[in-house]
Length: 194
Image 1 (cartoon, rainbow, N blue to C red):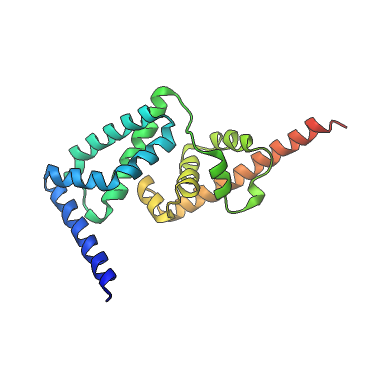
Image 2: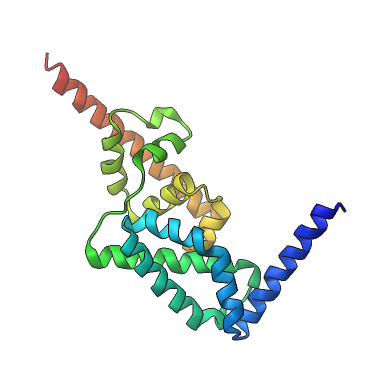
C-alpha cells in the first residue's frame, strides 16, 4: 500500500469516526461534517431552487432536520447520501410551497445527455419537455445528467431499487425524445408551412 493510499484509508476511517460521533450526539462532529459538505450542499440546493436565498433556506431546514434525526442513521458510511436526500426533499417542499419549476442550466443538461438524438429542436424545448415528465423521472434525469450522480446513489436518495431508477431514466429519455421530436416537427411546419 502506498503512502497516498494509506492516507486515503485513514481519511475514510476518520470521516466514519466523525459520523459515528455525530450520531452519538456530538454537536462539534456534526458541524465538522457540514463544513466538509458545505459547498456541495449549496450548489445542489441552488440547482434545484434557483435563488441564493431559497437555497440557503432549504439548506437551513435540511441541516436542522438532519441534526434532529442523525441519531436514526443506521449506516455511517451513507451519511452524505442521507444528508443530500434530506436536502433534495426540502428543495422539493420549498418548490411546491412556492409553486415553482425546478431550475437547471439547460445548456449544461443538453451537453450531458449522452445521445445527441435526444437533443432535437431548440434548447427551450428541453425545459418544457422535462417539466412534463413525472416527478420521479424528472428527479432521476436531473440527478443523473446534471449532477453526475451514479445510479446507485440516486437509488439510495430516492429510496428505490437500482432497476427502478434505470427504468425512470429509460422512460424519461424516451418521453423526452418523443416530445422533442414532436416540437421539432412543429417548428419545421411553422418555418415551412407548404
